Amino acid sequence: MNHNPYEDWIFDEGLKKEQRIQLNAHLDQCESCRKLADANTQTLRLFDKPATIAPSAGFTSRWVEFANRRQAVEQKRQVKLVFGLLTGFAFLSLIVLFYLYYQEGIPFGQMISGVIFNIIETIQRAIILLQSYRFVLTVLPIRIPVLVWIILGANLVFWAAFWSLSIMKFTYIKRAA
Amino acid sequence: MTQDTVLDATEFTRIVEENQRPVYNLCYRMLGDAGDAEDAAQEAFWKAYRNFHSYDPTRSLLTWLLSIAAHHCIDELRKRRMKTISIDLFADEVLPDRSDLPEKVVNTRLENDQIRILLDKLQPDDRAAIVMRYWHEFTDEEIGMSLNLSVSAVKSRLFRARKLLATAMQKQQMNGAGELRRQHEPQSV
Image: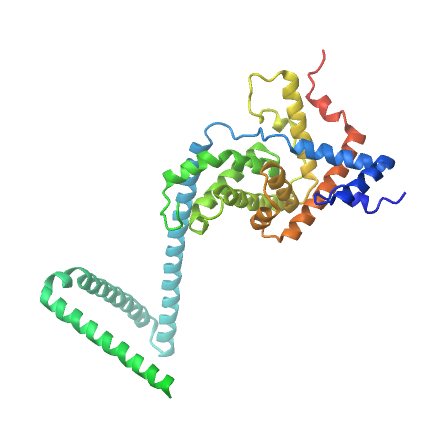
């Protein structure tokens, strides 16, 4: 007996009414296809049961602990990453410095002292840069009188407006041309 | 809850509380083991918490959570290539119901084992599609959105899975119909 296309129709959920009638007629005659259809029905019936599986009590508190642990791990990973990057950068800088001194044919002792001097100088510059940054952000806004701020702001607005108008004018001229 | 909302841990804990059961259920059906399901569900909630900024509030929150859980379980299954798990692991996983008669408990366990054995036959993606369809009543479109598949691909996966499951069920009935039942029946002295 030819089981095509009935074997596939058994599992097709979008069958038309005519196809359904044809399939039922075939199932009445064909035992092999009927067994397959029964197996499909039994499987779907098994899946039709409501879900009785649930996590054991205290899932949410366990999740909170889990989330805290993961957060701590991620923070450690970030710190490690930043530290690794800084170390790598410092190591690379040292190699570059040694190479530059070597190129100039400077003796080893002088090279070492030069490298140390460069490192100290870089740190000092970084500290000065940080201090100036802090000064600009915290001290400057308090020291400068309000009137100066207003004049500076007005100037900024004037030049911004002037710049916008000139852009508009050029655009207009281009379009007109 | 809008996308711009800064979600604090307490608010997300409420989401975990409300959605733990369906998420755990999907993980359990996908992985077939209570311990693995717990780990997977916690990991899925963690991923959801970390990526909450990408949640589209026009979509159902549960659908989004289940989609994350399904992807995580698919990855886990691919990693572990999990095959058979001891039936003993399932002994205490059904919700205790004092009104249950011993026979009813045995039948529920039997059904759970049968489901696990059948689902084990499927590829991870197909298994996810079946679980979403029959336990979470997802439409083809929702399954497609969750698993990044087209609707036609979902239909073909579900068709293939149903065929495979029915064949497996037939074999189970022919070969070892009484095998599972015997393992759950009390030993006669």
